[in-house]
Amino acid sequence: MATQVKEADDRSNLVYSLYGRPPFWEAFSLGLQHVLAMFTSNLAPCFILAGVVGLGSADRIIMVQCAMLVSGVTTFFQLYPVSLFSKKSQLPRLGAELPIVMGTSFAFVPTAITVGKAYGIAGVLGGALVGSLIEFFMAFFIKPLKRFFPPLVIGAVLIAVGINLLRAGTNYFLGGVGAPDFGSPANVFLGFVVFITILICQRFGKGLVNLSSLLIGIIVGYIVAGFMGKLNFAPFMDASWFAVPMPLHFGYEFHLDAILTFAALYIVSGLETIGNTSGITVAAFNREATTKETSGAILADSAGSMIASLFNTLPNTAFGQNAGIVAMTGVVNKFCIATGAATLIVCGFVPKIGAIFSMMPDAVLGGAVISVFAMITINGIKLIAKSGFSHRNIIVLSATLAMGMGLGTASPESYAQMPVLFQYLFKDSVATVCIIGIVTNIIFPADKKTHSESAVIEVD
Image 1: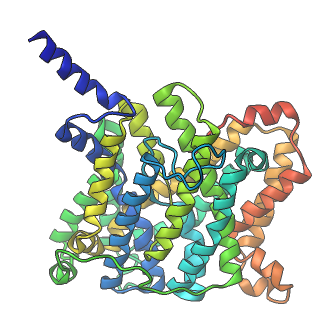
Image 2: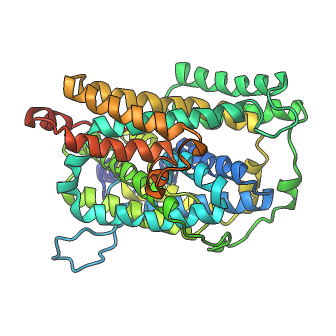
């Protein structure tokens, strides 16, 4: 009897170990937490871009299917790395072998909106595909490159991302640009119902309720929208129960300005992955992430984004909220996280799941994501605050925001007579902030003390 109890305890403790295989149903329940926490955030960027480029319901369902499929596959890369080179090689492998959950990145949405308006969805996917190469090379030179991207610069970029997204989120909150009832009291009411539900869950909810507040808010929004007659069930009824997501559904277009702006954002995505990788190792293993783990995580980030572009959806990145679940629960077992990744992959083959989300009224989506977008801005402010407000930092920050958020938000007509390179640089304010920030940081180098202190700041 004592031996049986000890064996049961050993199986239970496996969830707190990276390796080993705990009982399936225990692993599945723990993996499902990760799926619920990231499900809405994983799909929302697709709906925002789909609305901008005017995709129909069927195309939206395809994007959602692919987003779920790619997130699951890329998470498997992070859990079970693939060696691209010999095992003795010092070159990075594909994946970190850490409990990292991957999902569609919000950081690319403002750039995707800008590119989508100019070149359509094919231009977005082409720019995302080629631009991801910079993150691929970043994985091989992570040590020397990190000093060029301090938290001060990344904080400024996150502020730019958040401000740009808040504009889009507000439009959805009001019912979606172009909608006949845009800004109507009914849309505002529906948006506030979702927004307030999320706040209540975050204020009073514990554990999974708190982490799944977005999903809960959307479910409440759906119920209220149903009573208001704002749900169209035709996409769900028309969608099939099973379909294989096919690559290259939207095709590719390659434009230099789109590639350059996406490339700048991949730098930020790579640094986000560094922050989340370090956050997991510190919280779960009480140590800093190794160079091998960091490089592998970034390489998987790049490969996942390439696959995402091939499969008709936006780039992937490591999800911070899932790193938070790992820190909160202490569950780091790869098999547990893998059951969640497998669930995402299975969902990718069920169009009716995508159809449920494609029915979402714009006001519900707006009420759900507007707080997320504000949080991105606040995370940027937190990074800048941690960097400090020395005279040097104020100069770098003021120059970065002046050029990036000033000229970067001006209408294209404002600099139509300028050289083509200048137009490329200032076409997208997020990419502009990133580029200007990097250049200004080099021109005004930090002293060694400032650099050593900023090196430990994590990107949330």
